[in-house]
Amino acid sequence: MRLATWNINSIRARADRALAFLQRTGTDVLAMQETKCSDEQFPREGFEALGYEVATLGHNQWNGVAIVSRVGLADVERHFPGQPGFGETPEGEARALGATCGGVRVWSLYVPNGRELDHPHYAYKLEWLLALRDQAAAWIDPATGDPAAQVALVGDWNIAPLDTDVWDMRWFAGRTHVSPPEREAFAAFAGAGYTEVSRVHVPAERTFTYWDYQQLRFPRNEGMRIDFTWASPALAARVTGVTIERNERKGKAPSDHVPVILDISG
View (spheres, helix red, strand yellow):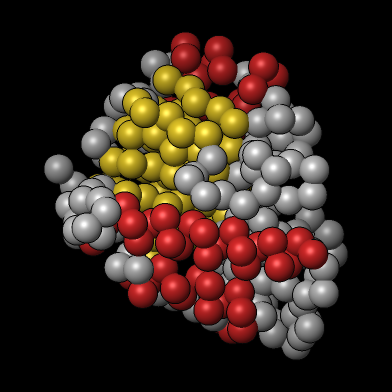
């Protein structure tokens, strides 16, 4: 099975790119983030015409996640259990969508940005990550879940775990995405028993997944690596390769992120 994650940065603006990507790469399951549309506005017809089932979670032009699959799409969950809300959205922002696809429990995740270190959204980000970590641990705990569960936590994590995951740490001084509490929250998923498989298969430094549109960031390779997959032990053992599709940042009207593809055996 081929599973990909992609912060599409508006699916209505980039549906044609997503469809072309699926056809070109033979991807079976695509988890998307920042779809920026309501469920009713999602352009599902094009995906369904290619044989994909579609699950979406979107309230308005902000946030939004989706999963499309041609290997089954069952037991859809909107929000993970215990997901915190923020501000006027106590039911939870449109940031987490789960579905079982080809025997793998896929979670499309758009982790809160955090905005600034002293902003309430930063505290919300840390709370959100802790709640997800606790839930993810429970899914594979022998007492509360299934140690053999195939779980993929994929998406835009809005955290650069290593200094080499940003183009210049000096530029990020005092900013979000690289602060010690965020990095500790990210690393806690390893403590919960998960493996970040993209790092295992693509360990190269300065291999980015995001480049801002401004200041010629992409031509200068001034990017960030913030799109990852934490895999449960049973799933991590099946991942045979990971590809970061850098060329998707080129061409007409690209997203500012690129897809990350996992190849899964069996």
